[in-house]
Length: 186
Ligand SMILES: Cc1cc2nc3c(=O)[nH]c(=O)nc-3n(C[C@H](O)[C@H](O)[C@H](O)COP(=O)(O)O)c2cc1C
Image (cartoon, rainbow, N blue to C red; front, top):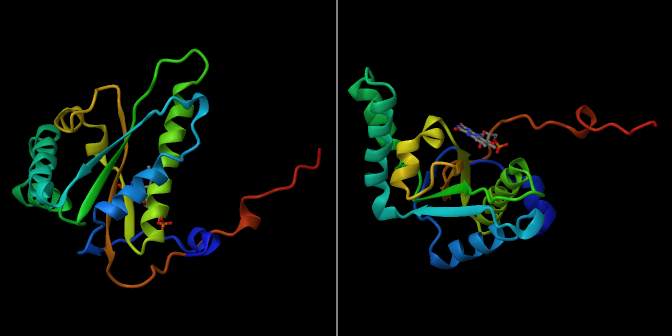
């Protein structure tokens, strides 16, 4: 796929189905992620793959964390939360892991992790897969971090759902440069 076609054509896939990326496609996805700009070469990222066969277990974990956050949650809401893990064949959890540094502030490390996440989106799209970057309260939940083997200080910056897109383009109106770009007049 042409690089500009990729950049100008990427859009989130609200609905995903099988098949998801296999080992080879995931390898390309992660090698792309590791090309993220990274001030000081701190490598402030981790990626946790929720493989197909662990999605049910992950869904249970998501529902359990919701129940702990909101004890009055209805069984229907818990079931909906559990089902979220089944929204795509593969989920990649993108994590910012901050490295102590006098020179590189944490915000720059977080930006680098965000760039890695975007590279994952683009590498998925380039290989013909759809993807959707999501967070929600689970991303900030200590019990989720613990269960994923992360450190409490880690930042889950996204759950990236990857699979085969269902349906065509969304009717989302795209912003235009004129509304965001200005030429500095000095
Ligand atoms: C850090 C981050 C977190 C997001 N979390 C969610 C989310 O939890 N749920 C959601 O519907 N969209 C979420 N989005 C937005 C979608 O990923 C997507 O960008 C948006 O729907 C616009 O679609 P587009 O990517 O086609 O422009 C998030 C985006 C970012 C950058």
